[in-house]
Image (tube, rainbow, N blue to C red; front, side):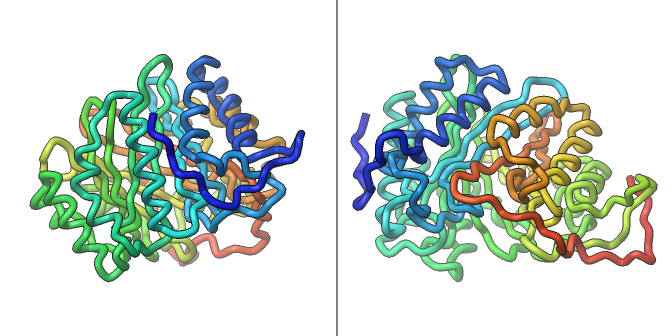
Length: 390
C-alpha cells in the first residue's frame, strides 16, 4: 500500500487520552453492529479509514480541530450515513476527508489522491476517471472549502463501493460551471450539462469507483430559497414521484401541519440551502437519478425533533426506523434534546429501476455539539394559505 505523507505538527496523545481515531473507531463499531456488519468487516474498514487519515487519526480530541473542515459543522473529518429502502437492509456509509490535517488545499488534495490510489491497489479498481480530471480539480493553487473527500459503502464480506467527491470551485467559484461541463464531457456525457437545473453553486462532483453495478457520475447543485414546487419541478425529469417529493420536502422542512391535515404554503427554505444531486450512468446524457437533500439540522429545534421527522418519513415510505434509533445510540450518549446537528441531512433518493431510498446523514460530533435552536425560522410560511398534502 502507498505511504501517505504525514501532516506536520501532529501532537502525541498522552497515555489514556482519546484521539480522533479512537472516537471514530468506537462509533464505527457501534454502527457496524447496528446494521449487522461483522467485527472482522468493521475492523478492516476502520483500519482503512485510519490509514487514510495518517497521523491525524492520532490527534488528541482535547485539541481543537486541525482545520475548519467543511465536511461537518464541528469540523470532524468524518460523517456517517444510513441508506434505507423498503426492500432491503439499511446500508452504512462513511464519508472522510483524508487531507483534513494538511495546511492547504494543494497538500490536502495530494493526500486525498494518495489515499484513493492506496484503496485502488488494495481492492483492484481503476482510478482512470479520476486521473482524467486531475488538472481540473487539483490545480497548483487550489481554492475552496475542500479538495477531496471519499465515501465507503460498507458491505458485509465484500469490497466496499468507493465514491470520490471533488470541488468544482477549485480554480475559483467563477469557473465552477465551466469545470463541471468540461468534466462531464471528458467522462462521456457531452450533453449532460444542459440537463442540469439552474444553480446557485456546484458544491461537489462525485465519481463511483470500484465495485458498483452501474457506476455513476453525480453533480450536486445548490438551491437557495427552495420551495416544494421547485423540488417537484427538479425531480420530475428523473421520473421521481412528484407526490413523494412534495411530501418529503414538507415533512423534512417542518412545514406539515401538526394535525396532518395539510401543509402551510408556499414555504421556502431560508437558512442553509437545499441540494439536489443529478446522476449520470453509462454515457447517457439524461439523468438516471435524482436526490433531494434537506439540511434538517437548520430547520429543527433539536435532534429529538429531527429524529421524529426522520422516523415519520421512513415509516411513510415503508422503511423500518429501528436501525436509525440504534445508530444514534451508537454515536452518542447525550440526550437528543440537548443538541441540533447529530442528524445533519435527510435525503430522498431515486435511481432508475430501483426502489426509492431515504438517507439520514449522521454527524460524528467529535469536537462539539451544536446547542438547540430555541428560536429559528423553520421556513418562510404563509399561514393564511393551506395546501392539500399530496
